[in-house]
Length: 166
Figure 1 (cartoon, rainbow, N blue to C red):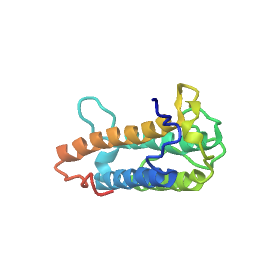
Figure 2: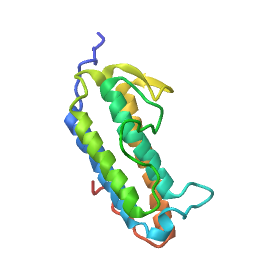
Figure 3: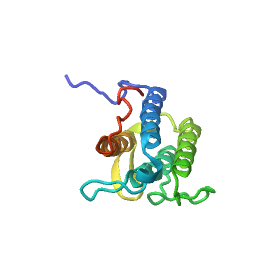
Figure 4: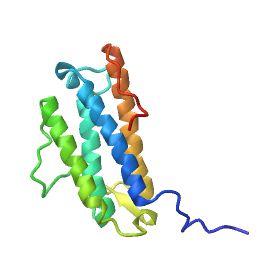
């Protein structure tokens, strides 16, 4: 007998949002931990500075959740229609943009139609898969880049925030 798992519920959408926002809160604390003069310049082994990694997360988060909710995907990092600039030169500007992105996620989340996470879609016109997979990719990508930030902080002699404190 084969079990139909299409209606099994492991986690609710609200729990998933809480999980993601826990990660985003932790990543924000990593941004805060960087010295102002190292956030935009420090790298190891040719990797991008953490400011660029954080901008990638921002470019994925708000447009991504909008695509998940509406099924209409702009290009990766496209904020057309939003009065927002991705040109940041200070930690304060990066944190302001991070907080704006977090607010967008919270605002848009409730408009995700029931059952949407089980639908197939093409994120940013490039990546085909079920919507839940795209959502997990956003979270996984953030965790991956935050790990790079941890390495950077440790190389600067700075203790990063505890990863379990989300």
